[in-house]
Amino acid sequence: MYYILTLLVILLDQWTKWLIVASMEIGESVKVIDDLLHITSHRNRGAAWGMLEGQFWLFYIITVVVVVAIIYFMQTEAKGKPLMKTSLAILLGGAIGNFIDRLFRGEVVDFVQTFILGYHFPIFNIADAALTIGVLLLFGAMFIEDRKGKKE
Image (cartoon, rainbow, N blue to C red; front, side, top):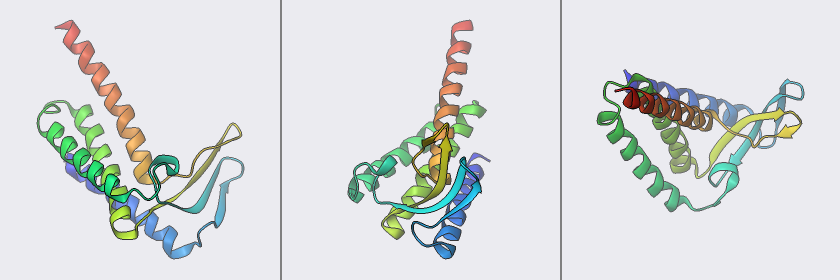
């Protein structure tokens, strides 16, 4: 069941990126909610916020290590812990989604542009959102597990 969630994240990520590549020019922007949310076609050849641009082999190695580690933890540490497995499945989908872009496009397609309290947040994609949500859920799961351990 959890690997289905991973697959859904990957499919949603790749489908939305395909839509952007097929229908928008790089730099083109469409307002969805004025001063809050735009769909902006952008490419990223680095990691988060463009860091380490062009270091593809580093990203390939790191992603493979992360994917193997997530699968290992899903099979071992997360057994019987639904929130932890869910968070790891979402993380796995996000990691693989951006890996597919780097592998086949040589860059990551980003398109969600938000403006929160006047701050222009860096443009991101579904895989990036999945990574963020997965980390937040993982912290929550770890906190819950820690509380359970202290009660026992």
